[in-house]
Length: 287
View 1 (tube, rainbow, N blue to C red):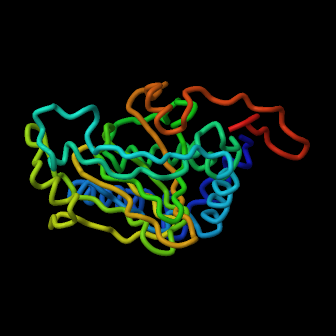
View 2 (view 1 turned 90 degrees about the vertical axis):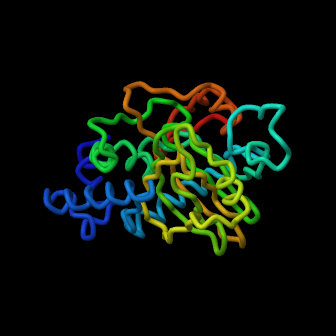
View 3 (view 1 turned 135 degrees about the horizontal axis):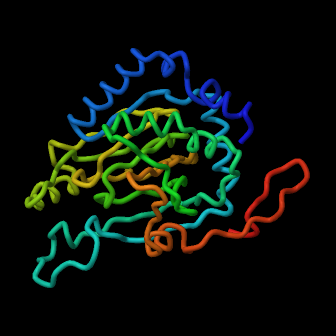
């Protein structure tokens, strides 16, 4: 990335009027509020973190990649692995819900495009670490899953699940006309207590813990989903729901398991990139 691009990364995508990250006092207050939200329910939302103009560019970039995205249409359980044979029918460990979406991998993005430019900005990495109260975080080195995006069209949804990692960072780029809401039950389970009755109630839509926080395009979301059941409700209408996912880890050079790459993108290895076209960036040879 050129020096000019690095200099512009703060002024361009991030709303510098609302988020004055160059002011230590303002930044400290932002970090404190995010930590408060995370401690309260495991979810912190920074509304309008990215400007509408930058959001439109990012959403356009992802939509241009839709023809090359990997399509997922699966029924998956919230819990990994096969349930024990003694688990009765109706137990939430046996329930499967639809995972229907299109997924764009890291290697499909233009390395100098708007989505990757924001992800590789060191200022965002440091801010995320501070808000999560982590001494140091690194951008994940995985060639497919470090920075990716999901596109949900009419009828698509992201079924009920728990995360296997400690936190997830996402940026909403486009909201659906209706539906497509992020819904979660914070801290519904804990160490030594799976709270299966509570989990079943959440899946049935009767749990008092269920929340659908309001969020609009441009919102940066930090979420701790290991013990919080969550999903994206079915999308309704022609406008697609688009979200970018940024992965960080406490270790440098972290890669996801090969099985995870295959589950999300249908492949485990990056696609070789063609030489750059005149006036344009290099593109994967196929997807």
